[in-house]
Image (cartoon, rainbow, N blue to C red; front, side, top):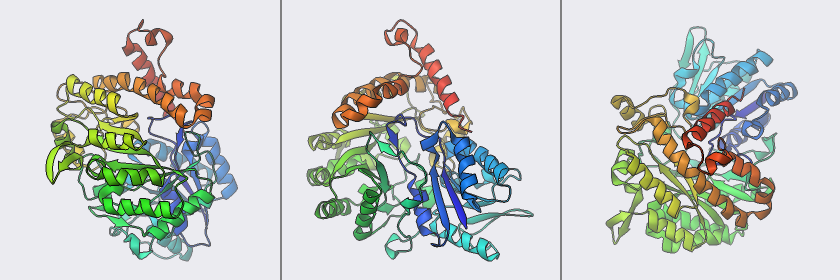
Length: 497
């Protein structure tokens, strides 16, 4: 069968797409786990944001797919349903499958009679899609496929949930990067790919969908597979690799051993990017951080979340941000984690969440000032009520959700208010401060990738300051007017199909 897998064009807007375009690793994993006689093509539509419709038309014409699969997050739902209608108009008899976080946690959004969706893959998709294609080929019944919802004459039927895979068993085969049909993945000018060494997390942060998606568990691949996957990514041109594990620092000793394995295998000429907990870096940094740097780690996305204890308690993120001394809690781990990473010449991408229920202007400004002082690149988000998370339930109970336009649930649009501030005021405070922090990082990026920055500096500044004008930058215009222009531009940018 001919299978076309699509990742949505909607992207988080923290970095301009000219600077960061990262592959959808889930689709490559799906492609690697179907039976080998199928012809699978992957299209990451973030690579063609300005020509989505024409690209889909071309791919449908060239591939003549029997099955089209879409990977969807909540803020991509509107685009995904439009793409379903486009695909259906171009190839009426095609079978359409949706999967990913949004269909898994809100399947009811895809079951309407006119949605155009035939199947929903819930949870991990590799084995479910493999079994679905076998049944489609054989013409037999779908009811025995775990993790699958399917349309019948009387509506959608939902099979039992599929247990998460034990990665050590070898049940999940390596990804198939050769299935990609579009080009242009980049991290500051370096061809970038993704590698996965583990899945799952045992923390229960209120804002996170992982626990709702797969439960509280942690499964790992063996290092031989991980190293082979890195080699495969390099053969496909990668010079930067993002480890996309849900929480790679959950087992610090394993992460240290992984760094040692990368060094021993001489795979440390790649620029690695990783997400990490502040507590893991702060409490083990004396041994872990030097190993990370020697292994090639360059950027660390640090889950600071917030610097105020009240907000950390709301986010259920206090325990993963604790600095300890001889087992005793001595404070927030963020500063020490940043210091040890900087000491070992790694850049810190600082993840913070502002606009929580108790936030005031002063509490938000305190977090923004922390980001300005300590992190190299701010990744500041607003709490977003994704389906079925504990945070969503609390926001609903407190009546704080003010926006149900899901295409704006991208983390940088404030869709909930606090008890003290409007959503618009919260977003304005972040926007006003964050753009200047990002401008500073462009200078740091120049030291890392001078040729790339010189070629793209105007696009990078243009993205960071879109909506601004010379008069607003000089302080001769009310910044609220520039903010409103920025919001209007961003709304227009979201119309991909």
